[in-house]
Length: 109
Length: 240
Length: 99
Image 1 (cartoon, rainbow over the protein chains, first blue to last red):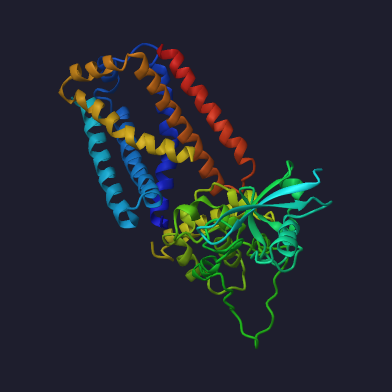
Image 2: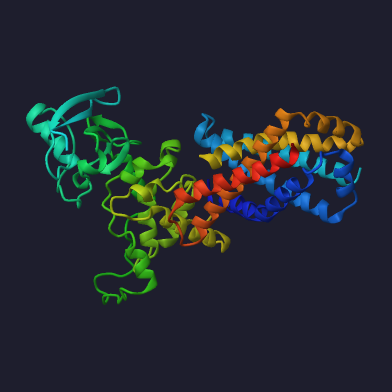
């Protein structure tokens, strides 16, 4: 890991500390009664605060997960730095695309 | 206290195996005493390193019952309450023979981390005045007692997983010099430890801190380097 | 180690999580069919596991940030145990609420 990756990894981690706390709180709160799509959509649909919260969360999580997986692959797989870097980049892009797709679906559709 | 110890010693190179010896148990016996007894009274071909016997030279580190230790200052009573000892060469280093490892990679990494003092004055200049109680000097003094024994390097998970990783000892040395006001090589040193395999590879597992025989804290030193290199990177003083 | 394995597991779960939520792109019906599937006890148990992983990864990350940024580094073993205990409690609370 170089200093640039380290910066992104720790910065996204710090950003996600309050995001994850809120996420866990929401999970515990809504799990009282079973989840339905209508419940979720009524909370998120057309809501700018939830949209920005989840968009920020997706961006940070994609970067954070990609760098983390890159480190694990570098140390635990025979891929080497370059191979691990490409795998991690693909994962990050896939996560961001899927994540933003989900946010758009929950907020706009 | 049992009358005898059952001592398994690593014999041979990488493809060797443990062989068991019986060694008389003595009062205040150290692990190095046990190894020396085997070499002097049972098998003179046993290879191992030691020099000072009093915890100064840093040459007698071995793996004792699964953990790296300086054997000259490790009492048998502390690590082998049940009278059994398993002593092997240090981990993460190639085995030459028996209990002796090839420490070349360990010392080369000190060079790669720029662990050499770069003087900022010549012998013609007046001696620089450094207050011993200044914060910078205290930070430099924190790890000045490292004896290069390699215990932290052998204990480190990151070294095990990443052959490029400089390791706790070399990075701690770099941190000592970064804090030394008389040193002129800080920029190059920060650049060296900020590259791949440098301080940011550390996972803060703290095995180095737990096992350092000098009770130093390499994890804290490496954390210091992480902060300093990050600041230098943000200011544009070093390349990513 | 716990931190690494929990992180890996979360990274594997995330694409699925995003994909399922993305199903509502075409209305809530398909999302609902997946959510009905998650009402089965074994799936709920697995969700409890995910809550545990998320919490333990959060607490492990806080430990790393604390070690790296504050001159404070003793008692790491106790911290790891505390993190596991706190995560277990959060996951347990989740399980109690869903069943």
